[in-house]
Image (tube, rainbow, N blue to C red):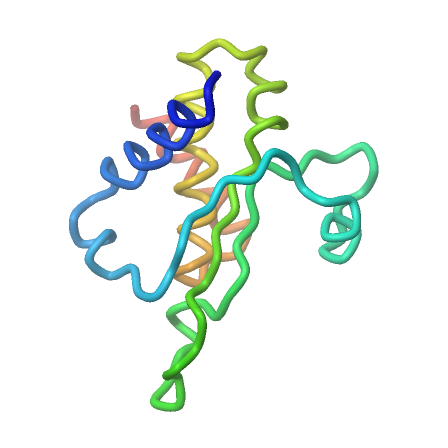
Length: 128
């Protein structure tokens, strides 16, 4: 898949979020990288056999207070190659997976933990 198409999938995933969620997002940038650097993966505890698809770096909204100002945007990185590899480059599968990863990382921006996000994702799949 061409990079522009992959980036468009990310824009579409964000656009598919409920309006109240999009409006609540503050000071966050979403970027695409080909794959995670090995050093970064080891810094956050990703083991060699595990795959990193996305990464949230920043201060979650629920932890911001009156002293939060003048800081760089939070950063959500979506890793293209691992997602495409898992989806065997099927455009339909890549689109669905990108949506899941983007929503997951945005959940971290709102302060949700991995266990909380997995439960929400499981419930959403059951009801869709």
